[in-house]
Image (cartoon, rainbow, N blue to C red):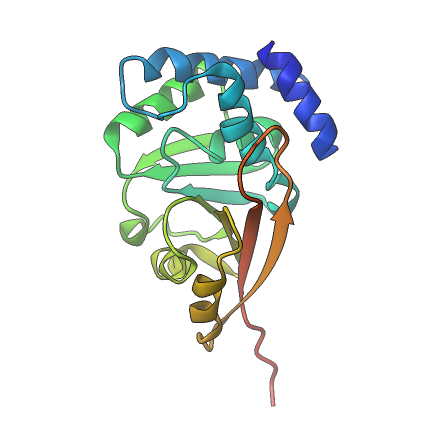
Length: 213
C-alpha cells in the first residue's frame, strides 16, 4: 500500500526514481514508524499520511535542488534530506540537527539503507563550520526566511541557494527579506499529492549579483 501510494504521488510530480529507491523510501517509513512508537520523532505515524507529509512533501522540492553538495539544516528525523538523498544518489548530503535522538535515527537509517552519500551531524546551523560551503541549503518548517538567512548564510556558496519549504505564501517574511541589501528571493507554489492542507511554497534565496562598475 505504501509503495503504491508513493508511486502514484510520483506520477503526479512527474518524477522518476533510480533503481532501488522506491524500496528504500518504503523502508525509511517503516523505520520511522518503528522508532516513532518509542522515540518522539514525529507526530505523524499513520503510514498513508507519512507518505504525503514526509515523502512526497520532501520530493516536491527535488527539481529545485542543485548539487553536488547539499545540506539540510534542522533536518529532524531526516526530512527533506533523506528522501532527497535516496532519489539523488550522485549528490552529497549533510543532514544537520541539534537533537541527538533524531540524529541517532538518521544515522540508523543511513546504515540500514546503505546510504553512502549522506552524513548526519549533531550541531546547530549557526555553529556548524565544515570548511566548505554548499550549493544548496534546505530547511523545512524551521524558522522564518530572514532567520534562516541568519542561520545559514555562512553555509551557502557565493552562487548557491537557500531553499525554504513553507506552507502558505509567507508574505510577511518576504517583506523582511526584501529589506536585505545582499539577498534576493523567488517563490514557487508546489503541489504535494494527497496533502489536504494549504498550498505549499518553496522560497529560493540567493545572493544578489554585484556587477563591476
